[in-house]
Length: 396
Ligand code: BGC
View 1 (tube, rainbow, N blue to C red):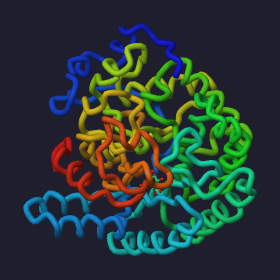
View 2: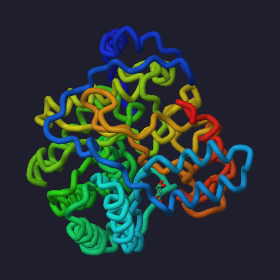
View 3: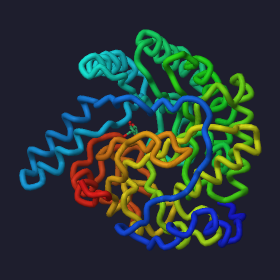
View 4: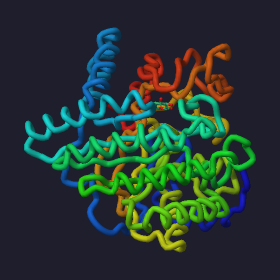
């Protein structure tokens, strides 16, 4: 990754004096005081309840029963929302059930109930890694299948639930690869397909009850000036083809990653990165995107597993990081300019299998930073979930 840095003091100036006192590691982190950016229009996370996914609750409950001494703390996790991930065409068949269930919760509470849905099934998915390789291939008609068999039925379901608010998060780890990972042959071969697929998704999901956010990686990936600029160009081109920046509400960051909101981990992990943490990253990203005409956007930060800092040796480590804890609880408007903190990655679901003999094995999932014994990406990793609960910061 290229490292074109802002001078160190610039980042300090942006973060402000309170956060500068933040120490590495968990606990004692100062409250973020950053004014990130000013979004325009309605924040879809505000004034709503969040859909609680009964499937996730079931996994948490099953684990609580196995750990009687920790059951009370574990059960608290059931109170918090997680996103619904659509990671295969087959999964889309369940979307109607989830949205009906959200409607039931909405009718029961009398408060609009927001469902957060992640679309994660691009052709040539996960082009720079193995752990989440997907079912669609560009050379096997992947774009057409993505459109007709994945996006169209999702849009149809959203349209069938017009009186429920929905947030659609489009394709984690996709366009950022177009910005920085062109050296990977699979990424270079996917540029057109990624763009075409995402443009199509943005257009099809432009419904009155749906707010779209594009994935924008995290501080440890795009924090450098040069990378944010590359990202801005990629986003701008996609949005121009989709009908302009107003087609989306904003950007989602830190999805399935571990970057702390406000500590100074990044200053130790990558000296040249002007973004030592996720809040500084979002602020600088908003500035860069603003310079490319994408102003007034909302930002969502995944805080599912970023409660603890000082847990990885390399910022490039992304798989089931040992020592991680649940982060800030999902809520709207946590900091000016940030639409929400949200648990986008359902805590406890694996990032990738750690057994080298298994399909989709990625060496990152057996690195020194990774917890051993992990199942396939998306599967329940019980011991890891228990650790997330024990390490939660703020505590449960
Ligand atoms: C996996 C998906 C899973 C998602 C949420 C991704 O890493 O590839 O299959 O649904 O994480 O756990």
